[in-house]
Image (cartoon, rainbow, N blue to C red):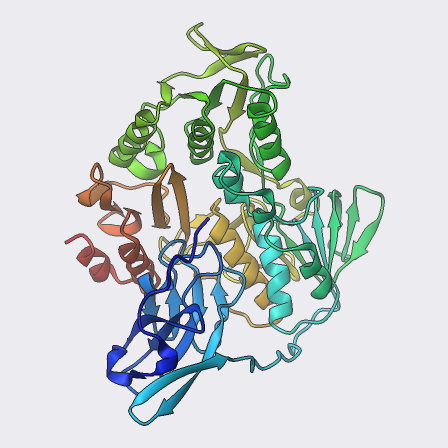
Length: 518
């Protein structure tokens, strides 16, 4: 969660000189009791005024990065068009406000909010209907983008969970920690879907797909036809086939119901001790959240240090130290052998007492529907650069999609929330004939107590890691190389550098990436 804080900077309604707005830059101020950002994309006289607060988690856009006519949020890399306020890249889904700017002699004066957005015209290529299987990050983002691009045909969003789409990253972070209310977890209010004429079919699964007949069979016995189809079924948490795994205090964490159940065990159930199995991002975020709630927390993992496979040894040690500073006890180099009502038995025979257990040992893509329908599958649903599967008219996005990564040249399947949302948006546009290849640089963030780690790019393997700054001092940039090429960058409290790295990766600018290490 974020906040707008107190207003600062000049009052733009009183006027400000053009020269005070740097060419190719931004100036923070206020107008009508709101934080406003004046943006001057070039060295000319054209200046735009937009709301200065990101619509995702209220990040400060003035601390972000201006790239052409787009401003990027420093916290989670949402992107807005300064000409229209439109949220052009997730995780933000809603636009920022736009204000009229008037020239009065040598001054620029910010006036009232603009409401002159031109209505979208119906796309030239519009399928008869769109069905989206999966109501998570990719599915919700795709449904919204179809409407934003002017598509007015039927859109059906099928979700296995009985609740409307939620902000899944929050389920292991603020909501689980008790610092965010449940109403903040939903991506949209119920009325949004009604206003946008998006049909939600919740609490039902797609059980069969007929590509020839363009029809999807559902678990309630009904079926729905489609003109275009998006598979966004995501992934399912891995469950350990161990004795006692079906005991009531053993939880996975993927859905709102999962998070609710853990909270109920921790609060209403009066739990005092928790064991987290898996030193993954989800596992460690859950550990931090449970520590915030005052529980004693032990983490079990087979690796010698947490997160080393993704972040490398130095950041892995840093994350471990951060958790240990907050009282988490690690049992690394061990696996659980069994679950008991009183706790967890480890592979060396030792026992860890626990009132609740959270298992976070990874996920598996939900591929059964695609496999049975004859779509090409290879460790994920294989898609092309436009996110279309081996069957024309069927697209895939999110955790189950294996797509060509333009940075590394590899075929990758990436389990990041922002990637899933951006893929959903791209798939929606391509369903409407825009034929724009998906080229977004992967991004994710992980929060551990008050320390965020941002990661851009994707390095499934590396042969060298370079560190600029001090990881221990919580001011660092970490670059992951393979054969001399920087494939990914992680940062701790270097938000501007993270944004700059994202731009460099988009532009294949290795010199620019190298400069960030100086």
